Image 1: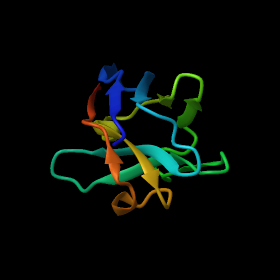
Image 2: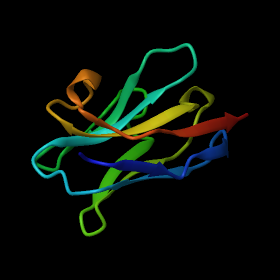
Image 3: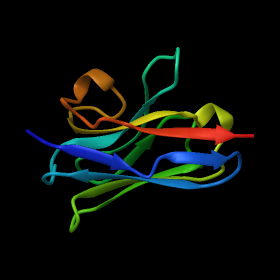
Length: 120
């Protein structure tokens, strides 16, 4: 079983920056890892992923503003958020073990989530 623990959520002003972290209990080489989010009353949305070969993928709504990265020495995944917008407010989930980039059903391992609120 893979444990995923997110941190770094909180309140940020619109236009500001925030970095989310996800500590993984073990490395997930050879699989997709990434971030999803869900706002109240809205569907789950894939945000970003790192593919098995190391290239990345982003939802159109965050491309150019968010950056996903990983530190393999620390088994930690990051999501750096820049120019945060009110519509980015959501609970963000770290995911691992996937077989596609932004397909939620493809990830067997999920963290508990960390909440991001955006004030305008």
